[in-house]
Length: 220
Image 1 (cartoon, helix red, strand yellow):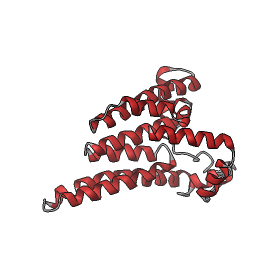
Image 2 (cartoon, one colour):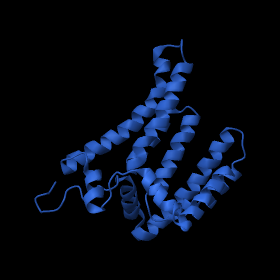
Image 3 (cartoon, helix red, strand yellow):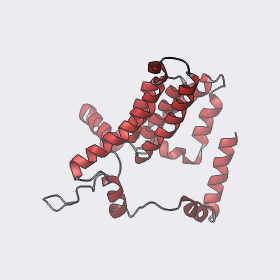
Image 4 (spheres, one colour):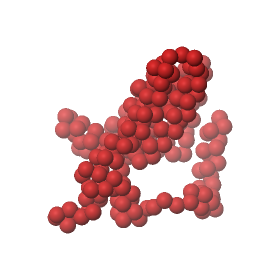
């Protein structure tokens, strides 16, 4: 899709826009350098993630310190304090799952829907929400239909986040596939066999060490 001035209309749609929108709004309010603001905000988001992880563990009566340590020690944790959209996405996903555990279906779905406006992978949040809704729907068997349908609010709002983002991209670029086009032609990325990439990675000892550290964190 090419605009009247000769630029690809999908070129800025590699990732959903919630994170840059949030940074732009905060930049207008606080008048800070955008780069410094991103690092500062992501450190705050990292702290919020640790709080959510602790709250999730304590929800089940387990001490949250070990889970917080696992997040900090994980090999990928440096992404959570960098100027990227991953911290916002992970916080929204963790918030959604915590609200799901507390059966606050609307909030869980809203957080997941916002995650879909943050990273393309946010659409997959619909899967655990739908599974939880199905389990709860069956558990409420014999109750009024209005009560049994309440859990389905979570996956509906989650899927709604994905759909509204695609409609937004379609309205601005002329195609709902703008993120895929931008990734393929702007970044050279495309869908592929994940197992091929995995096997290619573990043949290098550096990646094997990182994978071993990750498994150790998960076990602990």
